[in-house]
Image 1: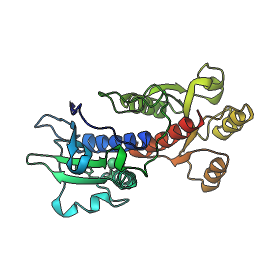
Image 2 (image 1 turned 90 degrees about the vertical axis):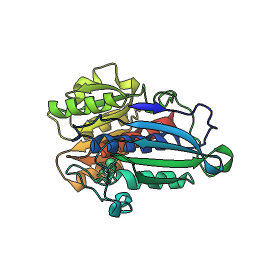
Image 3 (image 1 turned 120 degrees about the vertical axis):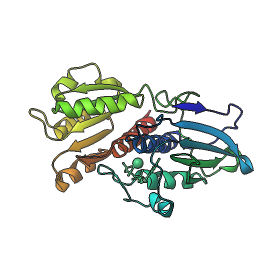
Length: 273
Ligand SMILES: Nc1ncnc2c1ncn2[C@@H]1O[C@H](COP(=O)(O)OP(=O)(O)OP(=O)(O)O)[C@@H](O)[C@H]1O
Ligand SMILES: [Mg+2]
């Protein structure tokens, strides 16, 4: 990955977590587009630059498969996907976020192999509609990393493969992660007070996910929870959402879906601080 940041850019006002979510979606897509590439370097270039009209542009350029020019508009439609494990929501959510910042998000084909996805948003003064969220310790942005960092995400699942894959995914995106095989183990740990988001399996031997949710509410330890479950039970889903869970995802879910749910949860967490 190569970073080409223009250090002289004016500040922009925006929702930090939402903009991180957009960049994350673009990076995930770029890395997926290159997953089958073996005959050239798999390189991603993230560039920031000044755009016309005092706007700031960020682009993510990959050396992947690229896309068919006829499909350029469909890429942004909700549920349009060419991936077996894709939901097709990454780009539609990202475009909605950027438009809510009075910006635009578009795709272009590279001269060489691959595609470039870019967005541009106005600088501070022209962007009165954007929300400023309080600067929180977990959402630190330095020039080298654009990801949410240092916020502890705890994963509780009795299935080791789920623990392992979520651990790897979240680590890769810069989160501090701890995994637990049961709700009891989590409660006995010193992570409870430090956890900014809980990814919680519904059905586990011993204390279940909803049991833990109630227990934490009882202790006034209101950690935002993203439930994950292999059982497509809409009633159980509705119940945990009514109890205040941020999301409840049915397995299998794509990386974009879980990362976006996590971002929403961290947003809730930031607002509560
Ligand atoms: N960098 C890219 N290079 C080539 N094609 C892309 C790229 N990014 C997106 N696409 C195409 O656009 C489609 C829609 O992307 P989008 O992010 O909305 O959904 P997804 O990645 O398929 O699934 P999800 O993001 O929900 O996990 C992808 O399935 C892919 O065909
Ligand atoms: Mg995607």
